[in-house]
Image (cartoon, rainbow over all chains, first blue to last red; front, side):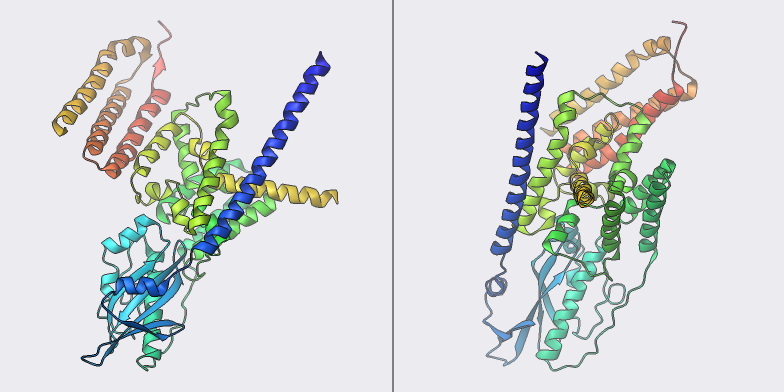
Length: 395
Length: 96
């Protein structure tokens, strides 16, 4: 009797193993397929886009690269120029068109395509960020806090767009208007934000290395204050997917991104554990503190415990499929971090966020355990690291 | 629609307040509650009722951000206050 039960158990575990392997292969193949589809289908048709924006103009390609169109006015004999550039923004590359007249003044700015988080791009347009460039001469510095006002809470996007407008202006100035404008040196210095983030990671490394769990309380609290509310910079699936899409920001414009990504990678490499989620993530820390205040930890049904984490894996897969197909990280990102820490969000997020926070009072780390794509991605990284080391030690 | 919604919101908050008030004698019998714990508990209940009213009225006026923010800004602290009061300040009366 015992032999039969053991055989049934073995058959069941073999079946489950085959099933999970099958699902793993399906996930990998579908994500690769989505990536290839995204690369092949997302081509930018600049000539058509430009003609749609300027339907009354007869534009001719003045310069191949950098891309400059000219519009010759038959009556006055004067040309206007439209320069297009692709630059790296917060969420990925964007295309911008700057219209400049023959006197070297900016007439208009159009963003042809972008991958910024919708709530943040809306902030830029609502604060009339692009309007301030009109009538500026092409030899302006276009520096945030110099002659351009950035938008608070969208500083990196503001700097990226200002840089793009500067570059398009310089292209027209040098190639069409024959003006010589001295190039500006890149100014970068390590500032307080980078130092604070590095200090936070150092605390995590020290706490984990010397097995000081009390340090975790401080890193979580500081994570909420700095990584959450002050920097509004928790790790999200959009940032992880942008690595696969090749969207790397400029180091001197977004040093925090480079520090965050490199340190998390180092953590996984050195410790094989997801220390970011348990020691630093501001949203996870907030949930944990709320649960500690209540002191209530509801017992979950065994089925929920067994299959609950699969919900997060499924949502992560779906999110990555959308991101790879559209090549736009903000389209697949569903975490409520921006709503929580920057009070920027749209529609249903405003109902999901309070629901998650209120549930956290009664279920420990509710979002992290069942829905968070960052936890899924980092845990996969840790498992991959363990497998590689295991294979290496067997050889 | 708006008039009906306002009536429903007032009815709901009034009902919840009534449930709390009617359970005060039972709370007094079962638990030892100091005067400052009463103040904290009543403050927490008032904040939660205010939160419910604000968020429901925001939903009716089709302002999801206002509804969500009220739940976070008022609801979470109100719930924290109540749960903290329950955990730390309210003791079960062992003489029952």
